[in-house]
Length: 465
Image (cartoon, rainbow, N blue to C red; front, side, top):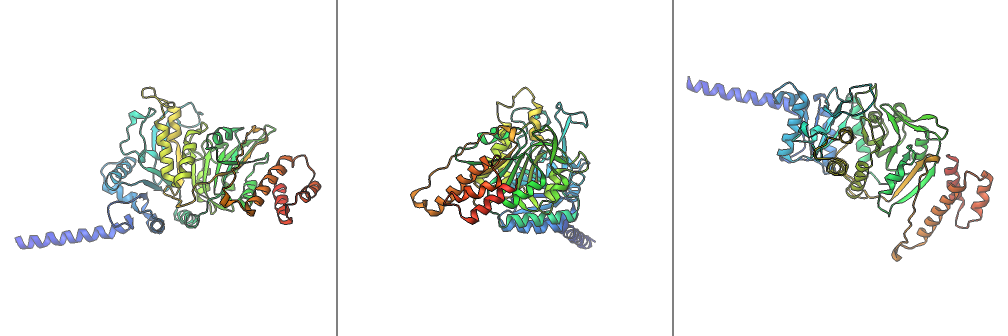
């Protein structure tokens, strides 16, 4: 009898092991040999196969990752609160494996966010006392009593989300990420100013060795954005505008409101690029209205592979966005750069107090979202020293140009020609509003260094407006 009992126990253990192995491949995807890895990915079990393709690509880029299904996490921990379970699971992986990134796959219906009590004086169209935030999962020791205070709930993990509704959207997003990241080349940052001079504050805080190119434009539309992307070799976009969940808005010089971009416009973008940083109210909201502009951008066939936005009111983000771009230009790491920006912001004694709760400022942190590949690292060439800026004519945008002389070893004919063309373009852009089109040819002919091909390029740039 004792021997039969031992045999029965052994068979039971083997059967249990086989059952676990049968479930594990769809609950956990991993291309990691030890307990330490970089990125934890959490999403519905139905996304496991597609995420395996993403994980294999990330490994080729030097990022190790593991996927755990939300069903697996729900079964593994006791209790009925799935938000708490996800948080505890992420916290345990941070302590056990030292993860740097957390990627949530799915909308709030599939992977819910935590709603944090942080009241503010916003519009009475929803319960804005509670803010949805993904950053709850990035704080292993989260404490509700520290909300709004100096150093309260500083994130340790960079949290991003792929806000897809189904496998088809996920497949498209992953294909776009792979296409852009595998052969990414840095170019200028394209900046739109729709807030009447917001660029002065933003650009004025950057290092003085940055070059600014200002082109006045009072006809900001999505079709214009496509034209700009077809002419300019831009790698990232920053837009300072007014916003609603499904659109960006600018006010023209005549006082009329018009849309810069809608969700439909986002789906019709013709070019892929890196990051789109949206400084606009509600553009990142997944729980207001039928569609989110940030979600439309990230799930579109073209457009960006990373969208940074806010899900609630944006009180002109300067500190966070500035710190992010400074760190990103130095490291090329999207997630870590944004994490450091948030950490610096929450520890700023000029913004927060250790005793007085400042919810409005705190909400800038809570409502920030990163949609796309939060673990994206540009291995080289992340630093760029050129901005291409489009602003309303009445924004009183001030520019500063600093063209440093090249070293003797780099001073050649190509440099001279490039500098001459650059100065000539600025001259043309300054005077084109008062010049007749037939004067362009005569002016170009009077400058010996401008060839027929270069004149053609200038004419295209001018006629684009």
